[in-house]
Image 1 (cartoon, helix red, strand yellow):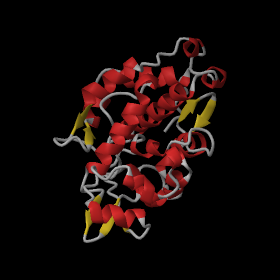
Image 2 (image 1 turned 180 degrees about the horizontal axis):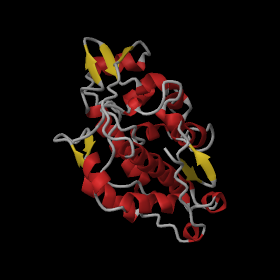
Image 3 (image 1 turned 90 degrees about the vertical axis):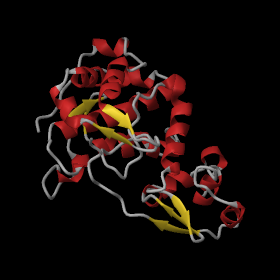
Length: 257
């Protein structure tokens, strides 16, 4: 795929922090499941429809690093989450039809390492945005981003039907976390054991870095006992640090409808 070199430096000075163009994309092409714990994307309609997605990607790529550095942390994080998700949508529609995002790329290069867009003045791939910028130790210290970035797969936490914005970032991150933990196909308590998404295995260190004073998965899950439907005995086992975990297989099937 050719590198998507979107960019107009003048766009950076009046960047729309409400992400209105992206809001139209999501509103028209993403749907919540009936219980609101997952979502699906109409990739075919997105590919065939108005060019709002490309317009938004151009807005993102027009932001210079110097402008980004002057934003507050919530503006930065909302921008980065939306950028990751929007460029993932672009990656999918440019490679449809697909059964999985993992079908993209040659056997020696996974899709998250493909440099196909520009952001903050650099040619980037998706892993750079997530791991080198968002997850950089000391930058944002926000483990709930793992329920916000979406890798176009059924196993992923849901892609929201609205963009993340600085003003609502806390509420949106918490809501996305609660929705994901309520989904019993990905997180559940069974026979004295917590069966949880592999997200918690892959990124366990992010949940143990002291966010809101939390330094263990046990403590993180204790904040969501209602969503995980944990009874008093299960909560006590968590508090004692004796809870057993089973990490569930990840479903990489495309989150399409």
